[in-house]
Amino acid sequence: MIRVVLPANLRTLAGVGREVELEVGSPVTQRSLLGALEAAYPALRGTIRDPVTQQRRAMLRFFACERDLSDQSLDAPLPEEVAAGREPYLIVGAIAGG
Amino acid sequence: MTTVRLLVGTKKGAFVLTSDERRERWEVNGPHFSGWEVYHVKGSPADPDRLYAAQSRGWFGQVAQRSDDGGATWQPIGNDFRYEGATNTHKWYDNSDHPYAFLRVWHLEPSLSDPDTVYAGVEDAALFRTTDAGKNWEEMPGLRTHPSASTWAPGAGGLCLHTIILDKTHPDRIITAISSAGAFRSDDDGKTWRTITKGLHSNYIPDPDAEVGHCVHHIAMHPSRPNVLFMQKHWDVMRSDDSGDSWHEVSGNLPTDFGFVIDVHAHEPETIYVVPIKSDSDHFVPDGKLRVYRSKSGGNEWEALTKGLPQKDCYVNVLRDAMSVDSLDSCGIYFGTTGGQVYASADAGDSWKAIVHDLPSVLSVEVQTLR
Image: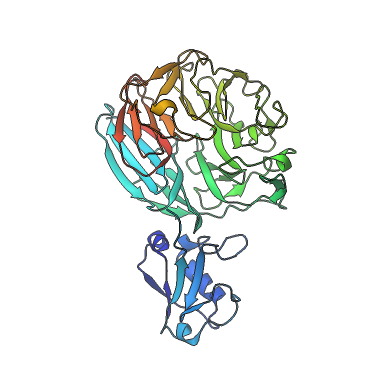
């Protein structure tokens, strides 16, 4: 199972805790992970990626295994530690605003 | 028993306030969608327990919510606001061409007859509609493709469609207002649109009498007299007696004719309310005094309503969707401030009371009279 950590506002919106677990088909990429996340929690559609452009929202970033994956290809395989569920995939909101 | 329900959108969530018909004691429920900007919450006239809410946040974009039980519980609904057809452009602040792109929903206007149909006014200015209770939203592209749309430019708050007026006596009529494009009317259910700006005069645009470019802040209509419209423009309070075909100024003796809200008494179509604001730079009430102004003559002659409102050291604003009137015999008037207060008057404005003091900055106030 893939582990995904959501920012607080999205946990509330999806009605979940800090971390969710997902079944993601192989190959495990950011695109397949985000697709599985939105399929499991439809309330999150459009909140992580713009629904029209599918671009990552500017004030969110994606991390895993202490690496910033935000600007990597969505179709690149995720680290084996994430695919194996040993490390979570982190969706992080910018610390900004009031 | 009659219940009065206030739907309050704030910069950090939504609140539902309820009272009996005496409107003295209020129960506060919320925050719903805490941490999110809730630009608007509104109930269906056809099914008052059906509510719709627009929540957004810079981090996460737009979310829409629906309640089927008067705000006790909510469920997310469709949030895909996709413009129809090729992307056109509008003017940007530097007069360059800028592609239309969806940013957020400003206003939700439920149909007068069908609880599953709702109109949404959005930024960048466009009109959307759902006919399946929010599952899907479809643009009504006739407005955004109006011949003047390439010249529309944003106001300080963005290029937002913030006012939608429906008319039960003319079911195919829709009136909208856009900052800072102006006002528009459709008489064919949103297929085609015409500007309704004749008589507007705005010194801050190159041609003060232009067909488009006026920063209309809000429009109000009394349902019994749909041909009479009242407008709070960036500057000037205006009136039309012909459904917007022509306007004339009714600012009269107001201390300043800048403001955002305007509304009409539930039973007296010539009694209207505004909250003058000091502008252009300050955008708070003048002289540190929070005053609602009432005209019982449809404009021009205004009286300050101050009883119960702070008359010193007050520096709040009242935004365009943050005033509403109930339909009880003694008409209730409600408004919310950027300071987080919601004020209520159970006597048509003669006296006021803060029914909550410390909410987040208030973006919108709607009221439902539930009998």
